Length: 227
Image (cartoon, rainbow, N blue to C red; front, side, top):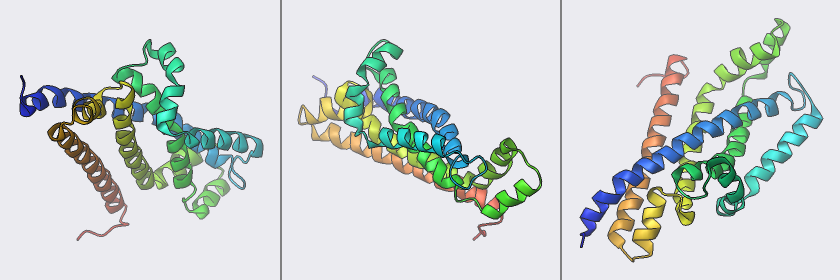
């Protein structure tokens, strides 16, 4: 019979890799959906460069509905869609579908908030100079909001790490499944503790890297002095 330490060496490296795979792939797709959605929400809002009340209200309703679902319920509700896309509702790849759908509205709202923090005088100057909407987006909004957008990505990754742990409840794999199947169900405190420690380390590492990147950007822009 395997000792706790041997069992940990057998399970945790593989499931750590599965957790990172789920988190980063779903974050990529969530950004792929949420970033454009957040941009459209920003520029279509009242008083912005492409004001469109109907479009804004429709997209806002979609985002609000998407954010209102608890992730555990969303996972179950999306099982038919997950099976249609992936061919199965179990496993790490299958978990990417609900993770992406849960994170995309969250990303969109964060992006919208970040872009709306850009100095309106910069937008006015760009409009006066005859900049197109595309130029305003890519040369004013996104560059000026970059530090805040990096923080948004960091926050999204942290949330996805938590979501990925919950995915273990429905056979999603990763550290969450180890904690439930081998820790909680078998009353194995050693496995449970190691799993929690690994999740905390991942979260802290992501937060540290995100903060370091934001600090680097601000220093290059002269908005943060070197100590």
